[in-house]
Structures are given as structure tokens and as C-alpha cells.
Length: 485
Image 1 (tube, helix red, strand yellow):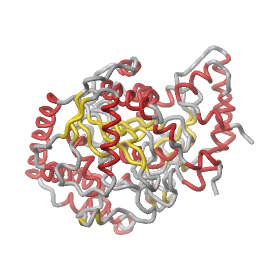
Image 2 (image 1 turned 120 degrees about the vertical axis):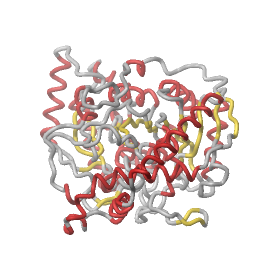
Image 3 (image 1 turned 90 degrees about the vertical axis):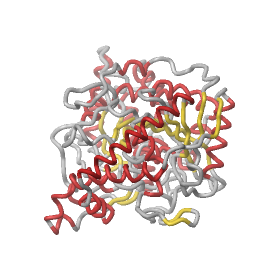
Image 4 (image 1 turned 120 degrees about the horizontal axis):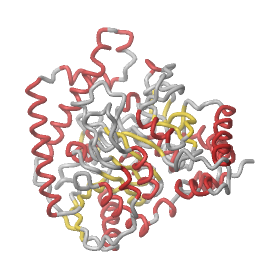
């Protein structure tokens, strides 16, 4: 039986272990494939796995390079599965859609280019909802991905497979993407860290629209904050194909994260004064996490939103619908293909078909007003805090919660409204573990930083991590028992 101890190392420690040649890349690959083979059939986090012999041959090449004193980067020899929304050269990329069941791209997406350049070995993909729509990772190609802490429940999405693979120690780190919480929500429900970077920090390519489509962003997920910063450093930096990319040196994320965060002002927005429907226990866990932040010296104060939350949501819906209609409208003229879109995708296109130029302009005006308002809040506070989700992980057979605490949801994603504000402001937002309810279900706290303020946000998150150690204290039961049955 393969020794899986390498899989339990934090990513940076694993990198040092491989570069010191205390373990080989082949040994890591063997251990990772064994662990995936043991746990993945139950949880379904990684899909489209590549041939084992090809992966072992790549690991051997990585070992030969290290023997010659050559390294591709800090991820040299890391087995990495890529989110199934990012094109991956030579590896099936389905977008969770039956329309692309057998699609194999000829070129990598930009994040995949950068992961390979840093030394990662692509072993397969991580599962997603169809087209990444909805925070529940199921599709008709691969089925449902199950929560690492309770496989009867959902893991969230759309980076659901990535979060579960991290929680189960199937991957050292993971890439993801986020429009409406897709990095943050599955991180919260997997008891790991997920960072939605500032707009432009991690350029997206390929992209049909490189100018107007600003809601979706790619970013890192990890089990520790230093690992998160290391992957952010790898994914960040300008690219000439992405005209709105930030022209900033990603080396800043290699700076020390341990720092005194005493006096950091945290504004707690809660449920927007009762506007957001929340399942009992969510706010209480987040408030417990805030007490932990206070324990490392932060000054936490309740904060009224001071802006119409319905205006934020309407603007988000308009801009989202515009993009979805443009993306899928051509399929409406092909009944066979149209029928292969899940109902939520069809609904998105139908919503977008009714959006006009004036609607888009008004939504952009609202978004601008919201950004300026949040900027004002961040002059009074260093960080804003929110729950990451409004409910705990729900039944894996349920597509989305139609009701929360007796309040009906008017769309398939209204139950995730809490994540729309940071998206619309274009600000960095990190999901940190907030603990567990009495059923053992995890929840996360969302910390929102100042414009381009990822480094300060990571330092706060690191102080919180060192104080709470949730990932180490509460690993998933399957990783403790080794029982995948």
C-alpha cells in the first residue's frame, strides 16, 4: 500500500520536501493516485483522470530535472487537477455540460499555463456545476460532488470539486473561479481557504469578452494561508491578452504573512439588518469567529450597510444576465442543443434576452455607486466581515434551497445573495473557516479588503488561522479513518 503521508503535508512544506529530495515526485504521484483511488469514488471531486503510466512518466521527468539541479518552480512535481471550466491542453474539458462531453482543448487557459510553468503536473479536472451555474456541484456528465464532511450533502460550487479535493488531501492546492461566491462558498463548506482576488489580479484567458465581463474572476484555494498566498503569486501578474489586468508585481505575495494585526478595525455587516434570510446558527458561528479575530487584537464593531441591498442585487442580476445571454443565445436557435442546457441556464438566457442598453447602464451606475459607498466604509474600517453563505450544506440531491428560515427564494441563486456585494465592488474577499454547527457541518466567514489589498487581507487571515487552526483541528472524517466505504 502506498504511503500517503506526503499528501498530508502543507503545499509549501511538500515543495521543500521534494526540492530537498527527501521524497521523490514519483513517490508523491503514487501516493496521490492511491489516495484519489481510495477516496474519490465516494466523493467525486476529481474527474477526467489521465492515464496513470503517463502521469508516472511525467513525475519521473520531474525527478530527473531535480537530480540535475533544475526546478520549474515551487510546484515542481505537484499533482494538480484543474477546475473543469478552465481549458486544459490534452485533457478533456467539459464545463460540466453534455454539449462538451468529449471536448479536448488544444491550448491551456492562462491559469493552467502558469500552474504548468510553476511545475504542476495536470492529472485531471475538478468537478463543477454545469457551466459553473449555481453553488451545487452536479452535472449530467459526471454526477454530484459530495461534501468532505458529510457525503449526503452538497459541497457548494462552482469550485466544489476543488474544495473537496483540498479537504480530502487529494491535491496540495487548487485553482478555482468566482462570479457569485464560487471560490468562497465551497471553501466555507470544505473548511479550507478560498480567495476571490481584486478584479484584474488574475487575468482570465481565453475570454470572448475581455472588456465588459468583469464579474467572474479566477483565484486560489488552499488549506493554509501561506499556501494560498503562494498560489496567488503563481496565478497573478499581467498578460498582454488581458487588457484589464493589473500591472502589478506578484512577488509581493511572497512577503512575510506573520504580522501584528492588533488594532485592525473590522466592520461586521451580518445579515444586512435582516435583509438576508439566514439559516439558524450561521450568524452565531460567524460571530464566534469574530470573537477569535478580537482575540488576536482586531477591533470588531457591528456596522449598518447604509446602502439599499436590493439595488446591489438587481444590478448584479442585470450584468450577470447580460453576460449569460451573450454566451448562450446562439443555442436558442438549435432546439437539440437548447434542450441540453439545464433549466437554470435556460432561465439565465431568457432573463438576459430582456435586458436592454438602458438597463445595463443603470446597473453599471448602481455598481459604481456601491463601489464608492464601500470605499467610504473602508476608510472607517480596514476589513468588512460577512457570512460566506446563508445556509449550511444542504442535501446533495437538492438543486438549490427554495426557502430559508420560512422565506421563499425568488431565483436559483438568491440564497447566495450575501456574496454578490464583494463581487460587485471588485474587492478582494477571502473565505476563512468559521467552525462547525452541532451536526458537524462547516461554515465560513467572509473578510473583504480594500482595493488591491490582498496582502493585508492575507495577513489578517494568517493571524486568525494561527489562532484557530480549524483545518488542522477538524479534518474530514474520511481522512482520519481511511475508510471510503
